[in-house]
Structures are given as C-alpha cells and as structure tokens.
Length: 164
Image (cartoon, rainbow, N blue to C red):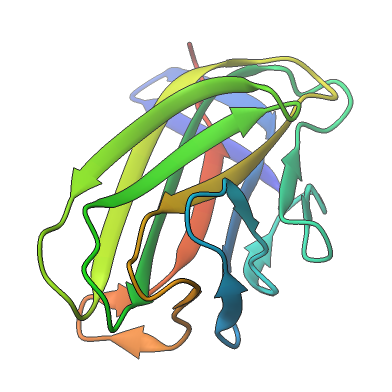
C-alpha cells in the first residue's frame, strides 16, 4: 500500500507503508482433533499490504523495520455433531507465547464459534498464528469456510497501529 497522509488544517502528518492483512478459509479445514491445540491455516487472502501473511502455514510475520503496535482479530466457526463444552481460540507469538486466549463454553451440539481481538507490541520478525482447541464428544471437527450474513465464518486479520 502507499503512504498514509492525514491532516488537520495546516498540520499534516505523513506515515510510511501501512501494514495490514486479511485472510480467511477458502475451504473447510477438516479433521481438527479434539483436545489438541491446532493451528488454523487461512488459505485465502483478501489483502496483504506487505506480503506478511503466509497462506501455507497460517502465520502473520512482522516485516523488517515494521515493529510496533498491532491490532489482530481472529474468529472461527466449527460444526460438531457431539456435545462441546470448550471451544477456545488463542493468538500465539513465535509458537509458544500466548498473546491472548478466549474460552467459550458451549453446552449443545451443532455449530460452535469463538473470536478474539488483541492489541499490543510486536517486534520485526515475530510471527503470530491462530490456534483452536475443542473437546467435542464426536471427535474431530471442521473449521468452516464460506460467508455468513455477518461476514466470513473463519478469518484472521490485523494491522499496524500508526501514531502510537
């Protein structure tokens, strides 16, 4: 993307490139085992200003020289024919540090969903992925692709916060 310029009367501030991405599931991610933390790999990009999201491994990597404050969002929807008590989502940095986690407790069969937003500091080279954990009594579930009236069913997006 190009340069972002904002101005108020004679006070104009110009920022460099704006790091932003949005990816979703183009097809269901199947066979997500119960009681296991599994990385979601969003295989279809809507946009990726700096080539920072990798559709092969599900990682957003902060580009060189672009460390700073970021805001990341992720959500998913699964199908399950069994009872599911836990339907959790987490954002993990560099494969081990949990940035944020949301535990959604479900009590019925059918679709389950969870979402998360995190804002904080990332350094150049840090990568973030999205992981899910569920305990469906039916075993494996699928994270759903496709669109709903409110937008994509399973997606990951983020942007650098400028001016912080």
